[in-house]
Image (cartoon, rainbow, N blue to C red; front, side, top):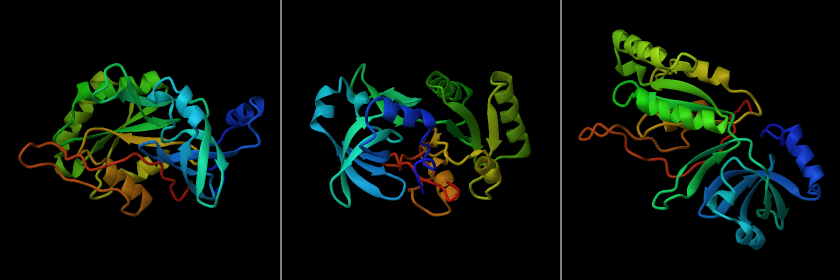
Length: 248
């Protein structure tokens, strides 16, 4: 695997040259763990931390690296590196930082398409969906709505949901998905192109982790069921991570 497989573009290459950064190694952040990072160069992963200068010059938490960021690296042994600089982001998925009024938390960067996942059986909400769509449109990210858990609904319930969606959001693509029967999985896989970056967003219990496991064809993320007492999803995914599919 090389950098172009990870989404490295001509524009990023030109930025590298224009800013005299060609002597550095290039990588993409795949995991973030409290200001410690995992960065891949395509053929190798490194544990990485930021330079003191980058930490000092950051005006807010949003200036720190996030999952999906392209960065320049100083590699100092076979498994460790220092992040020197973060490339400009073409898109940012963000939210209000918990407990920190006015501060933004970067969820992920450089996303091309967001799969907005809502399950048909317990948490499908047009109003919530519109909030997710607003986030995507403002960030320049293409949204695709995934209506999950269709195996738990009747044909009439599915059609009613489609009708409600089309009345409010005529321009958005949507896919019907069952992670159990895998109906709709081929449609989602067919959208995904090599060198582009996709994310799964939506409420807990909607099937995001199960979808990612199905796309990867292995269980890499914890999954949880809907609570019988509250009829709400249990939050089980503990971190954000960039995965590369078999087809790149």
